[in-house]
Length: 104
Image (cartoon, rainbow, N blue to C red; front, side, top):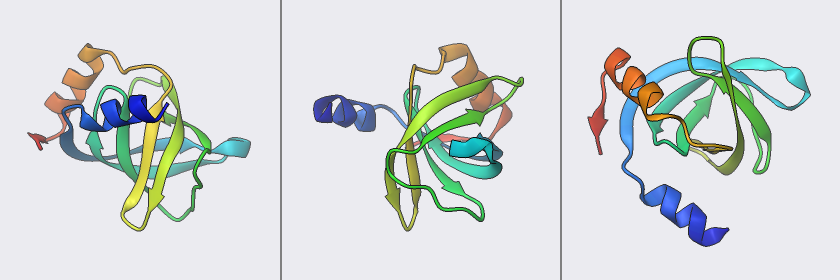
């Protein structure tokens, strides 16, 4: 799994900033902030709540669809989420269109 995680981290990251809903273990829904995004994961910051490595979460990026994932990194600067399945290209393109972004 570590090799796969390295491959995910090496993917082209797109910086963007927007808030969305996140469902935490136990069903609590809270706000989180995206900082960068790839098809396989994202760097995020949770508002007013702590998450731990291994937590299962679901995020709602838009259109009412929940995207499941796992917290794979937690630090002072935020948390890393690995999505269970890649986000489809058309969804990534929509987010990049809707929110200012830059390739980093």
